[in-house]
Image (tube, rainbow, N blue to C red):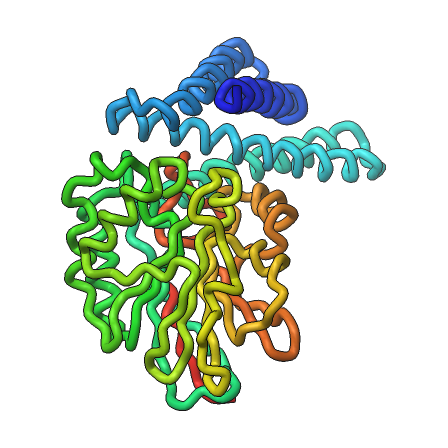
Length: 370
């Protein structure tokens, strides 16, 4: 029943967004008028493909080429909806201005051309952003009572699966090793497929080089595909899993919790008390938690929480919805006088192979004493 609701909800959302884009943007642009019938057919096709894509996420029946095409069209539809909303607002404001008919027509033509060029340019850049390896992002963070400077390489939301596979992981490992980190953390959604399908996709992670090793907590997508089997696969790579526990290393307590999805699946649920049990009170504590909204549930403070999940919105303006759901989007946040949080935009993508105003990253956290 849950899957049925998701499919129906996705179909209704698809029809609504495409209809809105057609009525409130496309029909208002004069040079689209001769092509409205073809555009309608195109949007009908996208609506059907969005329905197919939701089924694909559950049953995985599309080959990689079709997956890429369908995902790209859906990304375009979502971005077009966001631009249509903005166009509608700006057009309503500008309509109150007083111009003679000739000038008004010329201004509207320039306005429409600008929007169309903007859509095409941003969307093509969004595809480029998603399909190219993430760039290194350097972040400086002050931590009280830190004994020595510490460099942490952080990746999240790689989403190894239908499209991003072994070559992508190898590129991440190469970039991380060039940064020469003290330790590496992987904060969830590393895998987006069942354990038996992973094959050798994750093998390059064996080549990660750091002083203190690589640590991992699962994200919600691991639960969708069988978290227990995926954890076994990751553990076999020599990666240490911080599921509701902590380790004392490098002059810090490094702790981790299972994802909030564990509550829904009634398996491997997050437990902060367990995660912090036995930590050294004289050392700063860094907590790995995939979803940043876990911070809202915390009854105990730590010094720094490292999160992912948001993808920085992935496709603007859906960053607004992510911010409303999670309370965080991307970057360094001060939670209170003691606690900070860093939310990564992620290294990969989920669904449409598009990132608009939400570039991917490998975060290099340079910690120093406050």
